[in-house]
Image 1 (cartoon, rainbow, N blue to C red):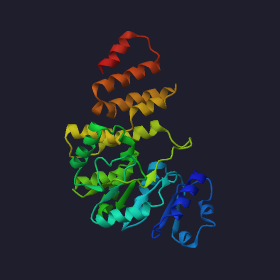
Image 2 (image 1 turned 45 degrees about the vertical axis):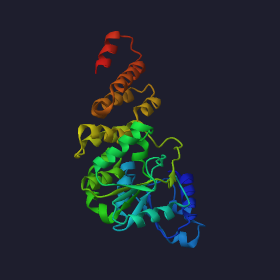
Image 3 (image 1 turned 90 degrees about the horizontal axis):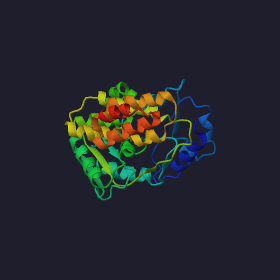
Image 4 (image 1 turned 135 degrees about the vertical axis):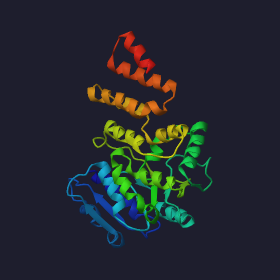
Length: 304
């Protein structure tokens, strides 16, 4: 239901320097006719667009999972309707995948990784990925969570990840099905490539379509997925995948159910990786939200 933003994205895709690509639009039962947005577009562009409309709104993660069923071979770039692609994006994607034909996926960060990556970096397994991000976190890049779970900066080699599509649907309740193929392929020692140039710019939503608390509840279930990581590596993995709790507190209001969700999220996942000072901050924040003056409760929360 973001007609203007999808229109902007299509305009930028029509302006791509490399025009050899096709587009599949997954219309999740929008409240308008998406076909209206391609009227008046250039013929070559229109001929390369296919619109797939769901009969019902499948929810965000349902539609994200369906992305992987639209093609059976080649490379796909998953892109949100409201993000802003560079007009050089397709050209750069092709440059990177030409050099890495047997990679399972390519990740184009939205953060500046030039200090750590000259052109691109090959990640050979999940532990390798955790080592890379641990170095970034330890030195100067703190806000990595949004970068890793971001939808529009990933390109997948379907020939390499098709065997994991069943698990995309199995774990779609995590709210981040787009990272499931990456997790699975790294567990099988298939290569992930991290490039150092951006292909997309994040565009803040215009309200009404995000409930950070519901999304965070889904993301917290990432702990259900088995993976061969040490306890130290799991802490890095959970921090990468999970929303920063500061964001949730900023989105907080007096609705009781959100306070209950904050408790649930803590015991489900935050407790597993937050540092002692962060845990204390988390519960002090909860205490303030509850406006509780009972010092004994404050002590109890601190001890947890």
